[in-house]
Image (cartoon, rainbow, N blue to C red; front, side, top):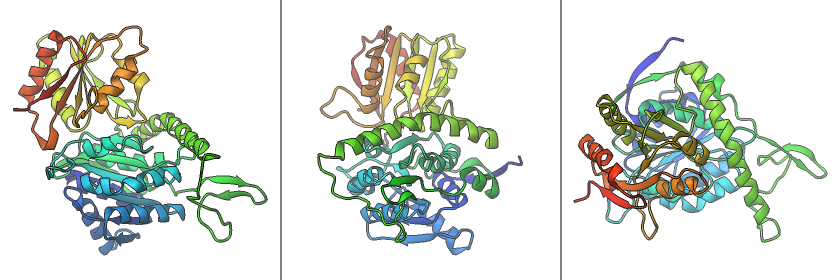
Length: 400
């Protein structure tokens, strides 16, 4: 296939992908550093490049509320936000997943206030990790473009029917111009297809599409007390578990049309085949860690890196299998561990290895809060000290 190369920052790459996915409704409220996504998409609409209802609203809560209503009607929907905007959506996050609505939302990661900060850490999206949204963390603008296209197909799969977050690091990816290979419009449209609402069995009505339709009236969001609430939550658990093979399959299918594959869709390792020391990381910092791993391996050091791409559902089996022979693991968290034993990625990794016969030493590194830079020299220092540590420690990388 002929490659179309464009110079795009991460926000523009996401907007371009949304344009190609034939979305019906976009609703959003501007917030730094996400604003470019919906600004750019509104330009596509104004220029006649896409037919879509663009609905500006008075808050992020309203933006996701509009998407909930539109998705319940059967529309393909998209929104984007950051930080305090995501926090304002909190109520609607659980409603979107609880109603099994396949909304796609881009999160441009930004620190939560207070103090006020507009730069990157993962406290916003990590804070809603248990809201039953699938979460994909991208390394660069190219992956942001690719992940959005995959996200619509994952969300709308008949076995999943759950919303998906695609996250990129604020400013580091969102505002940095990169070389991005995009696919032809018709190729993307064929790959994503048309949203086909799942059918459900209704007594006396037979099978009907699970959407709001006056001809086949259904109730969404009804009162659900202790008689059925538990069962519906178990159905959400089952759905996100069913997303595991779907994520892998769509990652492989996307490779067939693009030549790009991101590990197995969940994790992407480098240098792990003989590594004694490994680091787990997600987001844009993975590129810096990988460059240091290459440098150290050229010096004969047995080190590796595991980039965590999909955080929800958490790939605990894949992580244990990939790192089963490693002696020491450093887990990098770009969000805090206030009152806990470590950051969210660290805690999940500890749990993953709990029943493993061979347990490596695992150390937590909190880094990059509020956009603090994590330069290569600091990453190299981390690799140097990891073999000397006992495990179970929480360290703060780069703090004064």
